[in-house]
Amino acid sequence: LAKTTQPISMDSYEGQEVNITCSHNNIATNDYITWYQQFPSQGPRFIIQGYKTKVTNEVASLFIPADRKSSTLSLPRVSLSDTAVYYCLVGDHPGGNEKLTFGTGTRLTIIP
Amino acid sequence: KAGVTQTPRYLIKTRGQQVTLSCSPISGHRSVSWYQQTPGQGLQFLFEYFSETQRNKGNFPGRFSGRQFSNSRSEMNVSTLELGDSALYLCASSTQGRSSTEAFFGQGTRLTVV
Image 1 (cartoon, each protein chain N blue to C red):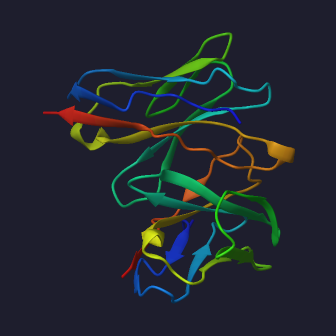
Image 2: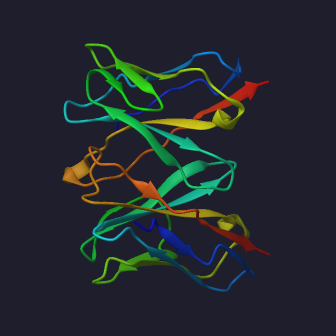
């Protein structure tokens, strides 16, 4: 199973760019890298997904180096509402079926 | 379109009882997964159903079971409840249930066992 490692927590000021890095040394060839955001007492919400290089959408960018052993979620100009836990997941395909494996996540706190 | 709906939102049960939680996936989604979230263990995978068949199962005791109906709605049952079963139970649906597709989570059912 591909395991991920992320910082436990991070603080940032409003308006700053935040980069959260995730390590996944044992990523398999078919695995995708996905990031979710979770607010207290709510289900996780999909942010972005990528396989290699760079992916950008309206809320974030995802940078993946050529070896794919790590990835960086970039949140531009954060606001207080970005305070949440962010999970990095790597696709797990035992027998071809799905089983999302969540790590401990990174608790991001945005400071006014 | 409507999101993933979980019922009930909150539940209080006593030890030894059983409980059934319900999840209605997004229309057209055939994969439904269940997760347990606790402060100590984080988000843990319970099982996944696709077209009424359990395709994958996490490391939980047999007291935790589930099923999926032909309309893709899913139920999760926990028998002989223990205090440690108190948790937020989350359901997620996706079109194919593979990592290359986005999973949509419900708001969860908060189960408290007393």
